[in-house]
Image (cartoon, rainbow, N blue to C red):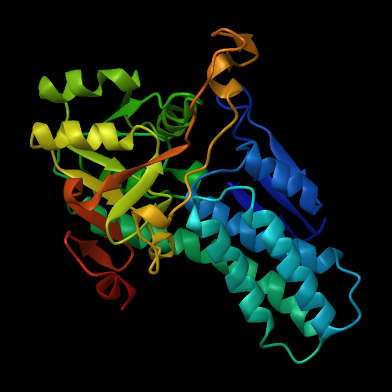
Length: 339
């Protein structure tokens, strides 16, 4: 199945619980706003494009559950649900983008039933478009990879981070589909190991060769000429920086030192056309993500913890941003991307 989708029969959201992978594959159901918000906060669903779909389906779910008897009251309910959903993950702009695109679409309705219908149809459209967008993005990005390349990636920007196909891993999948021999080095991505748990799992499902390394090994493998390109995803892109999983900045600096191209793969919906690095709130995660691992204590219970989920990589370290509209090489103006 897709990473996240709407179940027409049950009138609810179905998603792969990513916290259980790779040891267990389980599809869970969210039939109310609280369960969806918990799934987003706990990273049962994660990844910028997947969060866009989660936000969109969340508004569709709020529409279904609303008891509003007027169009004005339903719109009020949808905006209220949007505020609640948005608060779960403040850094990834796609979540907000998906929600407000659905809310805006309902304004085209002529009656209450029309608002309900449009909310669901627009959410489904966003999910379907994500797959198409990733395929186009992947085709553009594949042109940057040569036969025989070894590509390093950080965190998970594959099918599990999207509705399907993937962004950074979508580029790799597209290159493989073209017949290129591509190998992958996946950084584990502490503290929640999305690279080790998720990226390696889905690449192995597709029989794409992948080797897992600890995050701190990236300098070693790049210095020893074991990496030809680096491709990562993004959770928000401003004109001056790329926000992605914590640790991305380190890899970008090392890649620049060793003259290894560093690419970012992300849909246009990830661009923040009004923001800059200083305007973006970095999500701070639960300290126990560093004190514990899978329920086992690995650090002193009372040790102070600093646990930002993302870092900002200045655009000067990015060789190209791969989108569904083409490849943009910094420096560029966001108006060029928007158009």
